[in-house]
Image (cartoon, rainbow, N blue to C red; front, side, top):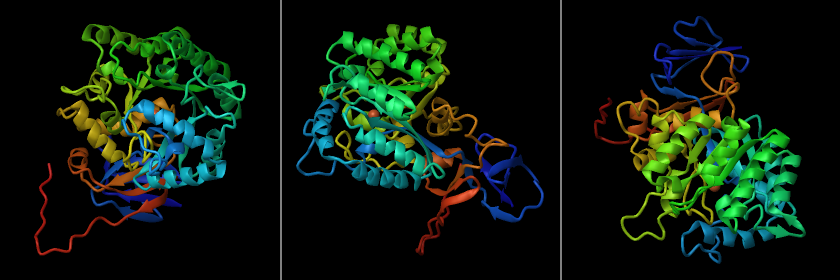
Length: 423
Ligand code: FE2
């Protein structure tokens, strides 16, 4: 069965307008691709690879709606304390129900790839077991990587004789894909540094990727990113390592940051920034001027350091909003990081597509290339600039050549003669 999508504007394929799909894979991307069993006219719309949310807490989805549990300070650390009590009352089945709902919610905006940060500081590993089951159950429609994330710390947590570090290892043995960590939530710099070294040791031992919540603080002297990068560099593990958040790097002094940029390039380490959450959570101890709480995204882009955006939270104790719509994340991120130069607009979608896929090491399965699975989305815009300017909807999500969903473009019931200008 051959399916042909015609009249498409294809991301980073300026000379192509047609996509031919056969047996769920891209057979060809080009012009005049011949006959097919079915032809679908995309009417000039923009085709992208699917959105990638490379940092999302599926297990926290809609845990922030309880009137009895409120994060009054709006800080990261109060949220961690509140969650510690909340999670004791959850079951695996309840988690799975919420995770499935989260996946459907996120997928409805065009995301097909998720890195799921999943709390493992629980002696029963309830969230990890739930996430692994949901990952396997939904794999045909969505690709999920599970991070063994010790929310309460590797060394500052112990329950029923098991430390956070022990629980990370158990989660990896159960099948988690990535080693997580949170050095800035350990009780001392020594413990934080040791946790980073242990994360890298565990990743090598079990052949896993690394994704650390790293320096998610406004403390301009936070240096766990430096340690993580150094360990990754020593072990040749940079391309398999991601530093998430790194808010403090946005507050670091320029001389220090300049030197670190060179070392990041050397290691090949990846970054994830979460624009909406860190705009909301950081700067809480600042009066004015109030910091944005984001890492140096524009400088990473300019230095060829891989950086992606994530929607960290959807209605949880950390952040009361969030939809999983990566277009909204891109929009907020581009404003907060000033990525609106002429050269930025044509490549900005990398931040929620290819860059996330790169850090998840999905290269063989992801992207608009012949021979790869025919996974792509269709946006209601004629080009990348219009898509970003108007924050357009995703009208279709296609997986292995089949629709996960498709929507009709909006129709206006009006006497106005709407003739929108496009660039
Ligand atoms: Fe997070």
